[in-house]
Length: 190
Image (cartoon, rainbow, N blue to C red; front, side, top):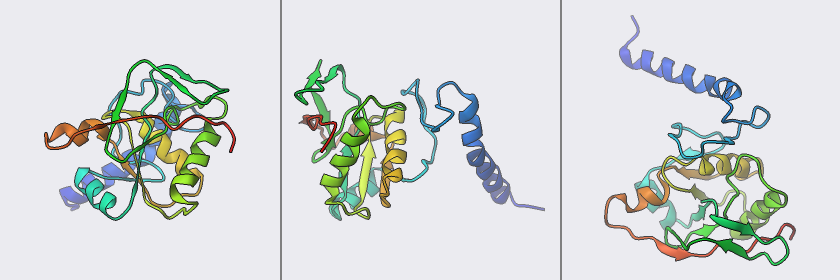
């Protein structure tokens, strides 16, 4: 007779395997790409294709070893000015110290130029090293990071870590602070 642990492992594997099928039937997901396209603030899954989920302790270890922090929190306001590259924001944004903020790259369907904005900036941050560790985050229960991890993996990056608790998880324990950050100016082409 199988153990409870092996039954749980089998059930978990079946549920994870069915995630793309579930997503295909859910209007919150794009059936062509599998990206989340609506209801971005909702409970997230335990895993992400193309990346590894990490907790705050692992984030600390990764930062110490030189990982790049990538904040994908969406912008609030008028977005990026396509000509000047300046962001029109309603309020200041705070992030994990040392993070680079690339707004709006976690949407399920990107506006014109944002694929290039993401790929160009990730290449700059990593020096083109596809094995450089990247920590992608947003806020807790935010699908923007989940989408962005997959998009970055499709660019060929190999060591992508997803911190789904994001800025909320960073300060939750009471001993961490966020710092003001500005978005990287938008440029649709290099």
